[in-house]
Amino acid sequence: MFHIHFDHVSTTTMRETLAKGHMDEADESLLRTYGDRLGWGPREQDYLMDMAIDTLQAKLAHTVYEVKVRSLCHCQAATADYLNLKERFQLHQCILVMGDAGVVQDFWMQLVQPAVEFYKRDYNVLFVDVPELRRNPNKWLQHGPPLVRGALKLMNIQDVSALATGVGGALVLQAILEDTRMFRKTHHIFNLNFPQGVEGKLPVDFDTLELALRAQDISPLQLWFAYQDEPGVYDRSEGSPWKASYEVSRLQARVESMRRRGKRQ
Image (cartoon, rainbow, N blue to C red; front, top):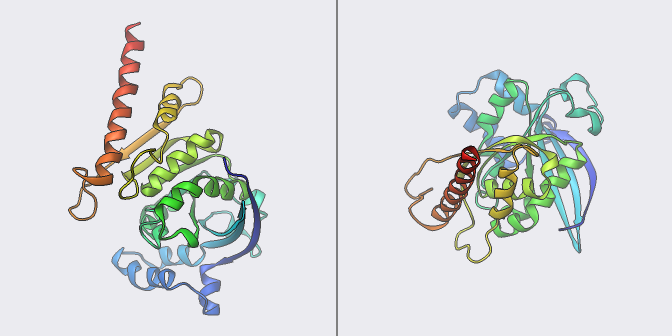
């Protein structure tokens, strides 16, 4: 288990970074180009312009990471200078959104469309990014779970559901296992994946995950897995997608078998 110290550095919005000319190229393309492809109107564009960007500093052993937490939060619009971090996310249920961490550079944008839909339905939505790890899925899985949990803790978020895809799904599963108290019972993972060429120890402790799923009377946990194979993108017949879906199938079979035995008894 890693010991990490977090400090809050700054808070801004996409609107403010655009006005100052400091907006990332990916953020600007989302507003100007992909918004049209997604069929967004002025309301959705305003949501993204008001997206808060919190910059954190995480000190892990001898390494210092910059952590970016983007959020669509209903409370922040209530005041010009933002609510205190301990209050900002308390009035609505929160959803952590994680894209294909370390595989897609600007992975937080992958699930931005469903994230906006959740926001429309009165959820707070958060994206956690570590720019230094954007091209290293193995490092994401090694350091990502405690970094994500530490960022959520600093933002005073103690009860969150997750929507994730790809390697981000594996990261979320491991983060949940390391501290189930921080997470709600229901999570959705699309096209779960591991880094290419993963061998030996898996990035997710499926044995501990099985125990958590069995302990329904103690700590209820629901995991929803969805898949859509696409040639050249995600194919469960080979490689890491096959390995990830195979481990989930084995886990499901064991848990269902245990439950059937319990009903007979």
